Image (cartoon, rainbow, N blue to C red; front, side, top):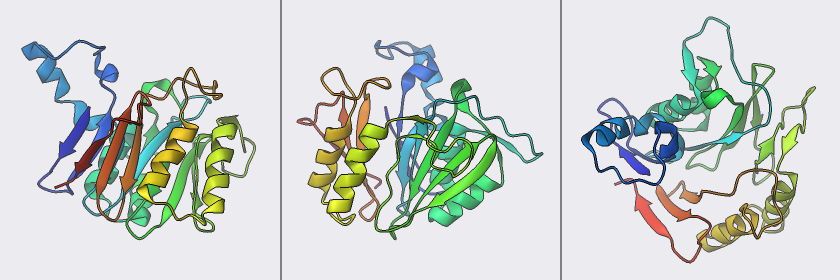
Length: 234
């Protein structure tokens, strides 16, 4: 589901939500009770972009559940995305918001975040051994899949190295400068599915290209890149 929000005390945003986390499968929301349950959709985004051009995405890491206990206010992974989209005007502010909270990973998992803003600033936020770390962008681009990038005991623990190498090499060749068409082609090259070589996780459910300057979102579902859906925050 594509979710648009316009909170009175925050920024407008659009985000992607996986409704199976609310108990839906393929059935349509025909019943009143289904529509009531769907009202929780804004609080389980996996990625999104706000009117300031801040985009955030969460990626799974194969590790034990993140469960910080430092006395700060508690937050879950999906609610963290909601908070960033509602409140952050740039990448640095998104990081500052995360630092103020104890992370308790959603769905008994472990995740890291990739953050970007309209000025081209990117960062990765991870929770290695329940300790938050920030990996800033170096050079003209930053790529992320499903392994730790924090230098430490779990450095490079995880999966997705093949997809990471394809993306990183492509971005290196283009000096981090991509047209939207090139960006979608790159995402097509690294999506996971039955006819692709990347068998280390579930097939790609959706692919999203965020334009942080224009505040737009291009969505592809089921790796059908011939059919694209285009959205703008306004």
